[in-house]
Amino acid sequence: MAGESEYKRALERAAHHCLEHLAALDAAPVAATASLETLRDRLAKPLNAGPMAADTVIDELVRDTAGGINGSAGGRFFGWVIGGSLPAALAADWLTSAWDQNAAAYACAPAETVIEEVLGGWLKDVLGLPQGASFAVTSGCQMAHVTALASARNALLAKRGWDVERDGLFGAPRIRVLSSDQYHGSITRATRMLGMGTGAVLGLPTNANGQIEAATLEQALREQSDLPTIVLLQAGDLNIGAYDRFADLIPLAHRYGAWVHVDGAFGLWVNASARYKHLLAGVEQADSWATDGHKWLNVPYDSGFAFVAHPQSHRSAMAYEASYVTHNDLVREPKDWNPDWSRRGRGVAAYAALRQLGRSGVEALVERCCAAARAIAVGIAALPGAEMVWEPQINQGLVRFIDQHAGANEADHDKWTDAVAAAVLADGEAYFTNTTWRGKRCMRISVCNWQTSEQDVARAIASVARVLQA
Ligand SMILES: *Cc1c(COP(=O)(O)O)cnc(C)c1O
Image (cartoon, rainbow, N blue to C red; front, side, top):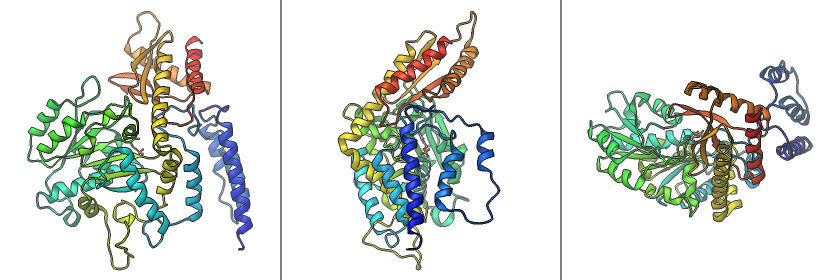
């Protein structure tokens, strides 16, 4: 094959650079160090008139991006909710690219279609969801929400004699979404994309533990009880990892004919842990669920999953069957369940991640991350001038920093908390991001990486201590 040696040269350079990057993570600053100007200066070249050798392209990419890559693949990255990549998942991701299948259908991706069939069953097992649920292998939780809420839209409107797939939403009954006030921005976007509008979402107040009280939900359900209603419950919200009380709220919502959707972007994974799965009690009674592979399962990006307890609604919302499309009734055709058509076989990396970990490995990953989050939060909160705002119940915690000047007020503490977080980033030892929670600026601690070690925990605490002493 003419291109063989060119593949070999380019792929070997890429493998070399990847290994170098991963090996350097432990010692390198965890935040990117190159400025926006530097990155633009290096990368914004005039497009070359003619071709370049593939391996030169790869070497140049690595040179030009130097300092512009956050250390999110390593164990000292605690910003947002961001996972690392397990070795088998990363390697399987490379294979997926080399195979270059179109995972839309069995005809164009036979093995990957079977992998996704199997993956769906494994995921439902690990996450404690009903085996009869249908699923989609999406780009992330955002599109998992779109898939699940499109299924909800179908079911709620079909019950009212409205065919939304055929007739659209003009003239249809309005759908409302009752949620906790801690819902993620991806829900807002899902309601926009699905024509429900952001105005459809009503954020209900939560209790001290970030949960909707049954009485609050019931009151909301009772008002305008004739409206088609989606109840959105949280399995691990992004700030404090709060879990709604599914065993109480789901049957309640069902009594009012609502569809219950669960945002479990990372929080559904605690089902793998004997220690934490009680947080999910009753979650299997919901109508749909969304989660990510690229957060807590440590699959490279482009990995999310939607599950729907009513396969017919899911299929009606997503399937496309046209005469020119190859259809195989004997297998699960991915594009009948997914919001996209042509796509990479993104299930392969998640399959490999689960194979590498096994059941006990997922449990250990979850418990290790929770223990590390708690240790970091407790360690930082013990420093003079620091304060625990939310001690991690799972892998998410909040701390803040108190401005020590006499007469300092809440606004000063907010400013000081942002200043401390910025100084910690500059210190290069740990990466945290800030959030506003219940009116206070806080530094969020999120641990989602299989590599985070006790040493990483100690380095993170030491870095904050250094900043506070400066
Ligand atoms: C990250 C996150 C999402 C969005 O997931 P993406 O994979 O980024 O699309 C939704 N909900 C929660 C709670 C999250 O943490």
